[in-house]
Image 1 (cartoon, rainbow, N blue to C red):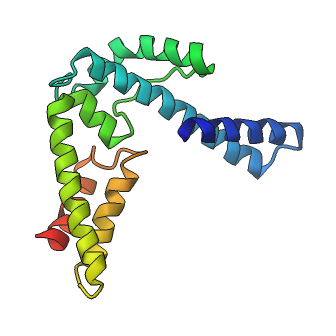
Image 2 (cartoon, helix red, strand yellow):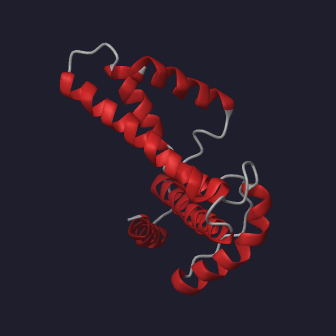
Amino acid sequence: AGLALGIGLHAIHMQAQMQAPGLLFTVVKTAEATITARLVIWATAIVEFLHAPLVGVGWGQFADAYWHSYAPAHQWMARHFGIHYDNFFWSAHNLWLHVLAEGGLVAFGLLLWGTWKIVAKGLALVANGHSARLPFAMASLGFLCQSLVNVSFSRPLPMLVWGFFTGIAFV
């Protein structure tokens, strides 16, 4: 889906370039760069995971391992999709891939279990419909959804806010 979105934005970008540059051109160019960067970062996270699939490269080691994993991931993306992006990132910009790269299958299994518990309790609150905890559950689930494309949990404050909402909603 991300690749299709990237190709679509690239087509819009090319059409916008033929017309007079303006706000649309700026928006499309920014979105195209963001999607391109994330695709390369995600490919790098997968390469990191493949280096140590069971236990990962180690907590807090994504940035260090990035230097070793970037070249093969970038070459693969360039060869298969023509995507070139040369920058350094300290996070996978995706909670699932970040945990998979740093913690391997062990940590990823724990993340899946915890997410399943949160989603199941959230659906139970939605089915109830009259719970005062429902807005906190929705905020907690929103954080999890947003972490698919961003670095929500890599800083203490967002983690604290998410923990607060999750605690009120599900405990």
